[in-house]
Length: 129
Image 1: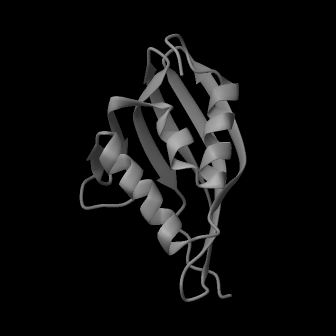
Image 2: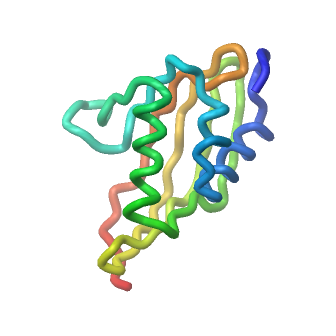
């Protein structure tokens, strides 16, 4: 990514990379000093992960436990340095239980890179296989 502003097309490309499980393509969108707030954790904001290495490890961890995970139907909106992505998270865990829940990410960008990603997802029970 180059300096400037990420567009809706860039965010669509990002989520296409998530769906391919292409960590290099994904991390190319993130700044070195990026912060990711996960959907769960002890803190009010979830868990805070700092830096590209920690964030890449978290993303790869999701694929390890849910190899078929997808962020389907993703849609994106950009306004200034902020962006929103909506999606439906779908995946199957090692026991065959399925997750299917709507969610969104709130992004902050700087110089054409994501510096903050905050994820939200509906808290829905696992679906039987």
